[in-house]
Structures are given as C-alpha cells and as structure tokens.
Image 1: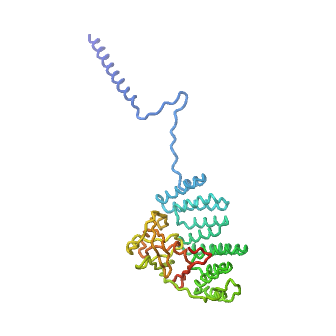
Image 2 (image 1 turned 30 degrees about the vertical axis):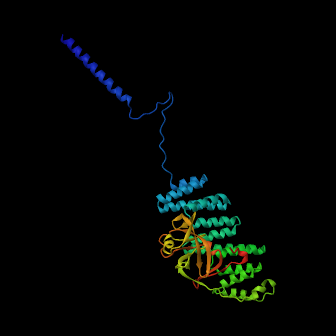
Image 3 (image 1 turned 60 degrees about the horizontal axis):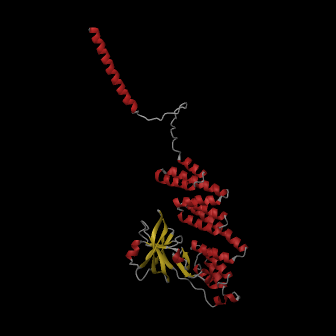
Length: 400
C-alpha cells in the first residue's frame, strides 16, 4: 500500500514539474531579447558590419574635391567654421585654396572659378581667394577684371605685407595693359581703362595724367583739362599736370582752339575728415544738417543708416526693392529708397537711390558715399590736403 502511495506521489510530482518547465520555457522562447532573422539553409548567418570612424575633416574635404563636389566641399568648410577650432578651419581653407591654385596652374579655369566663387559666398572677405580670381581673369586675358578683383582684395586686406604685395601686382598688371593698348594704338581702350582706374584708386595722380593723355588724343580737350586740374596741386605729379595744362595753350591743332581761350583754373577742394585709411565727407540730403558719409569707391550704392534717416528727417520714396550689401558680418538684404537729392560741395545728384542699412558699431558715420553718386563726376582724393575735388565728366565719359 505504501509503495503504491509513493508511486502516485512521484507520478504527480513529475507531472507538475514537467508542466511548469514546459510552460515557463515555452513563453521565454516566444519572446527573444534580440530578434535575428533566420539564415537561409546552407548559408552562414550575416555579420553586422561596424561603421568606420567619421573621416577627419581634411580627408572629407579631399574626397569632395576629388569628386568635384565643390558645393559639398565648401559646405563642409562652412560647417567647420561653426563647429571646429580655428586650426581645423584654417587647414580646410588652405585645402580649398591649394586645390583652386592647382586648377589654375593646369588652366582649368571654369572649375577654379566655380570653386572660388563658392568659397567667396561662404567667406566673401577672403583676400587670397580674390587674388586667385584675379589671376584667373588675367589668365583669360581679362586684365581690367583682374585689376578690379585685386582692388577688391585690397579693400579687405589689413597687414602691410599683403597690401604691398597687392599694390605691386596691381601696378604690374596696369603697366602691362597700358603697354599692350599703346602698342595697338587703342586710345579708346586706354580711355576706358583709365576711367575705371581713377574710380578704383581716386587718390593716385598718375591715373589722371594717363586719362588726360587719352582724352587729348581723342580730341576731348575740356575733359583733359578737367582731369589735369584735379591733380594740379599734387605734390608729386602736380608739376607734370601743370606742364600739360600749359601745353594746351600752345598746341596749333584746331581741336585745341577752345582750350587756348580758357585759362587753367584751380579746382576747389571739399574738406574731408580722415578715418584711418578712409575719408568722411559732408553730404546734404536737403536743407538740414550734413550727413557724415564714408567715401567708398567699392560700394555700388550709397548707404544711409536708419538712425540717420530718422534723425535728419530725410524724405524718401520706397522703391519696393531690396538690395544685397556686403558688410563686416557678410552679405545682407536691405530696402532701397529714393531721395530727392544729395549734394557734396556745390555738386548734387537728384533722385538718388540709397540702401538703408545699419552699419553696426560705426556710430561715427551716417553711411557710405557710393559709386551711384560719384560716377557722375570725375573725382580725385587729395590725401595730402584731405580734400575731395569734383568736376563734371567729359562728353566721352557718359554724362547722365
């Protein structure tokens, strides 16, 4: 009897243990911790590859440049500007410049231009990028465009070594272009070149001497006289200008009969205030006080700050347009207004468009006097006397 009882107990215990084990392990098998798809029969299970470490910045840029993805390369450079240290940013910049230089040396001008233009969008004050663009234009035979790029670079340079290097290259390119035009007897070409040069560097008297020579060759004595009178007081080239003015009285050609009747006159200078390497000039928008505008031949449009506009009660008309302006913080959009007139000294321009733009911490100035005012005149900045001389442009210079 006792043996039969043990048998029943063992049977029940075994049944319970078996049932529990079956239920417990059945549920665990149904919910695995990691789901791995079963491998097809006869094939090994796939091994998950661990991704490589992120490429170093220089390797990333090098790959993008090799793939000719210039937008991607410059985009990565912009990313570094916000996220990396200065050393990494400068290494990336040098990679872009070296690649552009290599493209220039192999005369791949389109690719070089595409890269440099993108770089200047990201860093528009990059002097070396502008120098390379100048060399690119020079390689294409576009000397005037090359010189303009060098002057643009000069406006952003600050160290004396770079400034001296830029000026030397500018003078060399100008001399080269003048010699070529003289060899081809292209007086019209010389006139156009010197017109632009006097705008790009209005304090360099030799450009005005060259301009007057081209004007005389083309028979525009009035314009030549005006150009020479602007620099007749220059300490270095005033004697040469005065000699050329005197010679106008003695030329027998009938083209110069008008000149003989008009004595040389001194052009009155408009006082300037020096601000470092730049000059402030007073400009009157109406009957009120003058605005203090910084002369900026690199600015295509005159700029007035919103504070000055309000303070002087300047009447304006909204054109409904906006312009893109270069500032110390990059390129920005600003509204374009039109004012009735703006006068500097005895000279005025009517219905002048202005950009209305805050110039940051420059509280000492009310704006910039740009080329949309200055282009109406022949002008010379006399640095020795801190004065601005203006005269009307000649008949061959497109008086508006």
